[in-house]
Length: 624
Image (cartoon, rainbow, N blue to C red; front, side):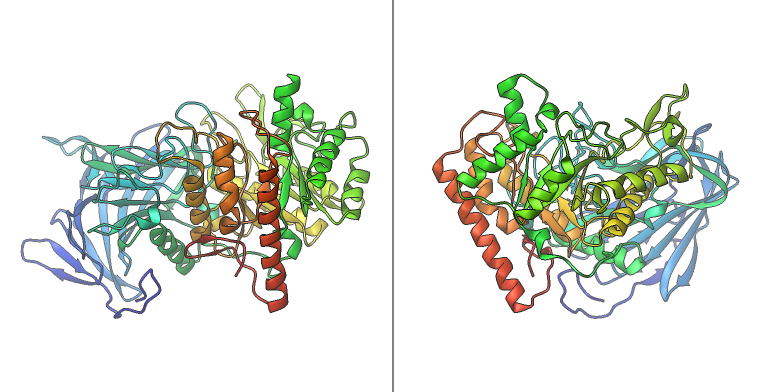
């Protein structure tokens, strides 16, 4: 066995001991677990002590037409799988013909899956809970029990604290926006891995240093990405309890046997990021983590970037016009000229929202971007590359029959489950990048959190949720690389299963970082995001983003550390859009120094023949 820190430890495989009272005990190097005589619960202990976690083993798989209650369970059946103890717990369900829980005792911890046989559409799956219908006391939903005090989620959002209490909720998935209760859209999806500990860290400003007397546990989900057909994974806390919730929304049909994604409960991690690296290792070992499709990484991918969105927002404040109206050829020429006058020459320019006439099509808005192709050629002539911003999922300009639709036929999003919709998307991407099209160098993909959600929606192809987003990005990515092999695709999807559909992970907007919580300023938050991306997708470049800082002081602080996290990005040319504070000469000087320092490191890598990669254990820096 190898520890998550990379040091070799003694190879001790889990072993099971059966007791006369009907209980069974599994002993491993980092954990031990006692399964109750009735098989319904198990007490899981970390080897470093602390209170055990009581796992409810039966599980809940609700259909759209009925809830899943357990009438009785057991007896537990033990066998050996791949040389390790494995348990099968049969149960009698009110809605499924057969049902059981499988527990594989791995070195990292127990790995649980839930199986049912029957017919019906899944609405919700509740791992680590049981809906008891045994009669007598204790009926209804029973969650698992814990004594955790602190929760870490790899999905940034509101509240903007780096760590939160274990009694607070967390959501990871592909749905979200700025509305109340939905502010978990910055990474869509983040790794499906939560970290928890019985220690308290009320003042933590760096989760990497949140190391107490007891280890961190991870609770994570994994499967081939095509089998992740739920939109969100919830951590659902209760009084001294918790369970997970997977939102299937009726779009996964069961006809025969069905097995859920696996849930691994793993103690013994020094900090949350070590837990994320262990999660990635688990997915890798199971064949569920994707590998990057290309081995070559053009040097220009790592050049400092200028994205015009912040400048557009600033001009919108000045003119009173919507920010998308400020995406024009004249405006971008003005911004680039301002940067040139201050000695700043970005290697890549990102043309942001809304260069298109319609979001769902490649055609430029000729009113604001007359002859976009010639402008891109001009940038190439000056040694720059051009990325075009792409709004994922948009149905604007897409034929209705190629869309996910409401019951009354209104289009919601493009439907990548429809083969003709995939062809539509692929052709539009080709026209953006191909030499006989606009000739752009890549795409910055945004709004992946607009994934369709809703039980009443109709779609084709059988995929939903995380799997459907991957299908969308897979279509886009393949088309982009076919049009030009060095196309750069930027997303904000740092899930290990998405490493084959992205070349660079964007840390996303610095919104909600004006939270009154003193532990939520920009730099610690962006360090967290970079560390999550580095742990989950090692080898993938990181776009540091730049929009929108709460004030000039925090913008300056972040500018000083960007090259420690990833490829430096700049979103403004003269002033901050949020506060109107102008950039001073000292700010331009800091940017010149940042870009010069970064480019010197790039040249050093080229001379040294070093391997390009995105991260080390401290964070992400774009270099090996």
